[in-house]
Each structure stands twice: as C-alpha cells, then as structure tokens.
Image (tube, rainbow, N blue to C red):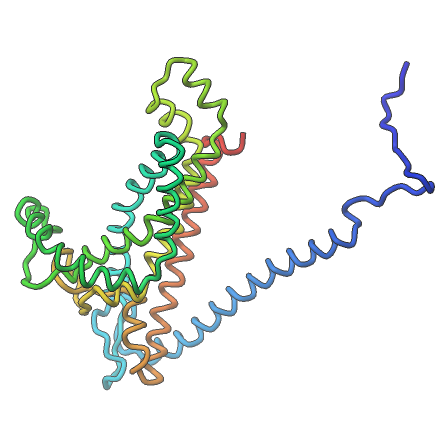
Length: 328
C-alpha cells in the first residue's frame, strides 16, 4: 500500500526552505501591521482624552443643562451653553440627506453594474468618481448660488400640498437657507461615496448565483431582488455609514448655505437651524478660552455620536452577514 505521508522536497544543498511565517519580510510586515493598528487606537484614545478633558472644564462652569439648553452664550455672566439645537440640526439634516441619497445611490449602482452597456457604465462610473473628489467648499458655493434660489419654488410647492404634515409647513418668510436645503446639499455630496462603494459590492456578486436564478426563469429584477441585494446588503450598509459620517461632520458647505439660529423647529422649510461642525467653524476664531472649551465640548458630542452610529452599523452588518451570502 502506498504511503499517504506527504513528501518533503529538499532543495539542492540538503537544507529545507524556512517556513513562510519565519521569513524576515513576514516578521517585518507583521510588526508594521500590528504597530499601525496600535497607533490608530492610540490616536483615537488621545483624541477622546483631549476632548473629554477640555469638555469637562467647560461643563463644570456651565450654568445651564448641557444637553437640553437652547442658549449658546459662553461669554455671559453666568456662562450658559447647550447643544440641544446643534444635536437636533445635525441629526435632522443627516437623516434628510440619507433618505434622499441612499435610494438614489443604490439605483445608480444597480444600473451601472447590471443594466447599462459597458461603455456607458464606464462613463457614468467615471463621472461619479469625479464628483467624490470635488471639495466641499465648491459644493457650498454651488448650494448658495444655485440651490438656495431654485429651491424656493419647491418649498412653496411642498408647503401647499404637504403643509398638513407640519414638517413641510413653511411658517416664516425667507430664502431657502434651511435644514431641508442643507439635507439636499449633503445628499448630493454623499451620493458619489455611497454609489461607488455599492457599485463595487454589487459587482462582487457570484456570477453562478445570477445565472442559476436566470436558468430558473427569473426576470432581471427578480435576480437583483433575490441574489444581488441580499448579497450586497452589508456592503450597502457600510457605504451608507461612510456617507453618514461625511454628512455628520460636513462643515464649509453647511456654513455657506445655512442661516444659523438657536431655535428648534420641526418646520424644516423655515430658515435657520444649526449643526455641530458649522457652529464650531463659525465661532471658534472669535471665541475666548472658555468659549473654545464649550465648542470642544460640542465636538465631543459629535465624536461620540459618530462612534455610536458606526458601532450600530457594525452590529447590523454582523447580524445580517450570515444571510447576505457574502460569507459563502
């Protein structure tokens, strides 16, 4: 009976090759990779410690409730500042952006990956990638000079036909420098990111899955619904979180378009509102020492909010991964 023991081939010279895990290059690469991961954790921890330390100084002197007060007057006597309005504006504008951008981005990604001819798909993908490289200040200028004037008609239309929802009721006169406008602008900005990542995920769907569905008589839409979307669900969620991260932290474009005030209103068409990043950029230069600590405290809330959103996304991806087909 022939032996099943694998034969070890010894090269000329009588010495076997060293195991790959013992090579100098592998050890160097392992050390660099491990060091990069540790460095990233150290940087994140340093940022968190800095923000917490400076925020604690401001909160200890604050005479109002940090999370619920609407006023922002760190230079007053006594000093009062709260981030309720900023938290509301940041969340509302980001939700509007995600509600608009994600469905459109997924549709564009599906068109590029499964419907468009190859030449047309390449051209559209190239344009989408170019949009992702446009600086935010350019989007802000475009929003202020083009989007704001032309959205006034849309706002009046929404007020006329959907004002009964209270959310789209326009109760103040003014140009469209509102959270709704900011949400649309942010949707345009995050659209290329979500589209590009989703497109790459959809292109990774195993060809056998699609061919099997077609062989069983499925239509093109049924193939996408039963094979493509389940496989790419976790990737779309990841792409959406990348877009949401940019929407939450966008500064210059929001500052260029928004007419800030410290009022909370569910009338998203009314001028006004505020976000964390816009408020920090607008007031950091003229703030005194305590005012800067107050702005850093609001930045800490944005930092924690971003971590919570990304953590929730990771949990969703982990729970749905076994059903997506990505681990098959």
